[in-house]
Image 1: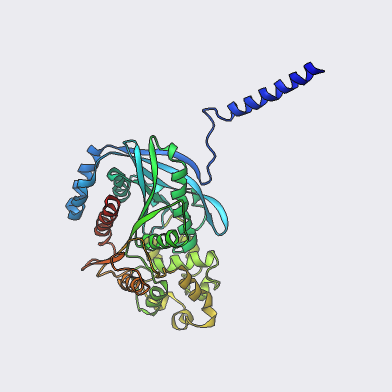
Image 2: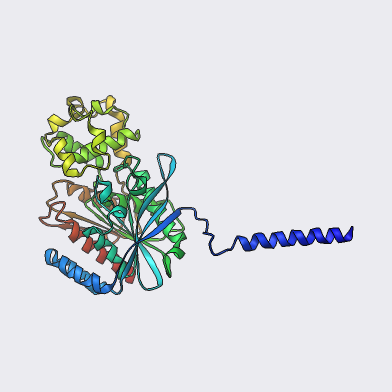
Length: 407
C-alpha cells in the first residue's frame, strides 16, 4: 500500500514536470493579447537609404534636412493584430519598420491620408515610394508603425470606416500595443515606452484623435511624448457645410466616402437615396469596394454639388430628418481641450480640399481651452495646396518630433 502511494506521487510529480517542460519548448509561441502574426517585407542598408533621399530632395529640397538624422539601415515587417470595429474583434494589419542595429527605440506611428485602393495600403504596397520614405524614418532611431486602417490589408473584407473616430483610433492604439508586447519578434529590438504620432489629411485627424485619447483616457501602458498633425479635416461639421453649400467641389469621392461608410456603420440612419441623387446613390457601394481609385470614383460622381446631393439635404440639412447626420459629424470631429503634451498643427495655406480654417480654428480653440502656446503650435505653409503640402509637412513634423525625443 505504501509502495502504491509513493508510486502514485512519483507519477504526479513526473506528469507535472513534463507539463512544465512541454510548455516551454522552443517551438511554442507566446500568447499575445493583440499581436497575431509577422512576416518579413524588406531590408534596406543605410547605403541605399541616403541616395534615395538625395533623389527625393531634388523634387523636395527640404528632405535634405533629414539626411543628418540617418544613422542605420532598416528592416520592414508586415504584421497582423487584433482590433475592434463595430463592436467586433477582427484581425487588421500594417507595416513595422525597425533599425537594423539591436537596441531600445521609441515608437513613431504614421497615419496615412485618404486611400480607396486596397492595393495601395501600406502592407499591400510596402515598396511604394512615399511609404518607403516613411519606413526609412526607422533609420533615425524609431520603431515606425504604418497601420493599414480597418477595411484594408487583412481586413479588406469590410468597408473602411472612413473618418469614423473610434475604430480608427482603436486600430492605431492596438497596433502600438501589439508591437510593444511582441518586441521579441523583431530581431534584437526593444520597444521603449515612448510614443510619437504623425499623420496627414485623414491621417492628420486620426493622429489628433489618437493624441487626445492617449492623453485624456490615461493609457498608462503608452507614454505619448508628442504629435504632428497635417491638414486634417478636424471640423467635419464645417467641412460638410462648406461642401454642401458650394456649387462645386474638386474631390466628390470624399463626400461619397463619408456617406458610404457612415450609412453602412449606422452613424447616419438616412438611406443613401435621401443624401445623393441618382444615378450616384444606387451605385455608391460598389465604388468603395477597394478596387477603385479616388480618380476613378471622382469620374463616376460629379463635381457639381447641386447635381450630386439631393435638394432636401443640400438646402435643409438642419431638418430633423437629418438629425443623425449632424450628431455623427459632431461626434467624429476633433474636440479642443487643455493639452499638456506637445502637438504641432501644419496646413497648406492654399488648400482647396481641406480648408486651412480647420487648423486655424482648432489651434485657436486649443489655446482658448487653456493649452499653452508652446504646447500647441501652428505652422501655415504659404501658397501650398493639399497635395503640395504633404512632403513639406512630413519634414516639419519629423524635425518637431525628433527635437522632442532628443531634448
